[in-house]
Length: 146
Length: 106
Ligand SMILES: Nc1ncnc2c1ncn2[C@@H]1O[C@H](COP(=O)(O)OP(=O)(O)OP(=O)(O)O)[C@@H](O)[C@H]1O
Ligand SMILES: [Mg+2]
Image (cartoon, rainbow over the protein chains, first blue to last red):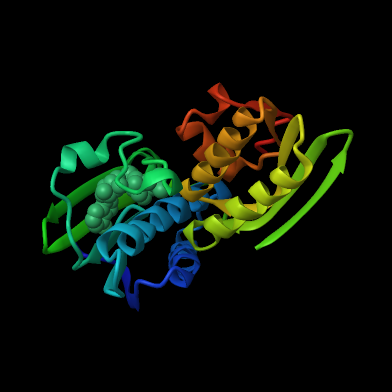
């Protein structure tokens, strides 16, 4: 699909980059004139995906995370977040609410939140190869002049 | 991470602030637990008024605090939750297992 604008970020899996990644996507999304609620949903979903890379994909080492965002026609924000970490054995199970391999520090709600806060959500993963999360969020056009 | 607290008649109020994510959650959990262990409150109130952002890492902070209060047979109460953290907490069904006072999604 032809994109109207795009950006790409590459950063190491340091937890300080969680805030950076969601803020960067929020700034990029601002051109679609989203509401605070829409922006909150997008930031939350990005934070979940990036945190998963940091916590689960590269548990014992630093790895690279690639984040791509595009603006598609009809005010759709398209986001891809990709790691080359350990990957997911059983995708169905991983997506189940409350399922976690992270112990008491995690609640197992990340994928559930991404799925319900965004309009489209796709998860692909291969053990030992890495994981890609692909999400879209349509921004509702409101009245009023920009 | 910013966190202020005060105690009144075995009621501990902890005011959370800023952005709650994986980067700061562990530290926040430990700071809250420290206060609970110090004051052994009957009621613990987490105040979300100044929380500007929260993701699922915040759910773990609440659950951790809830478990701590349960072992003390005390109560946990959440208050002044802005719309964004509220939506995240609701996704996890937190409103079914803790008391929420004056929720304030704008
Ligand atoms: N990028 C990833 N690489 C490898 N495994 C992953 C990745 N993302 C998720 N997983 C696996 O899927 C499980 C579920 O992920 P999800 O984000 O839903 O919950 P969580 O991260 O465990 O907890 P929470 O997101 O609530 O803090 C994780 O526990 C982990 O086992
Ligand atoms: Mg997660």
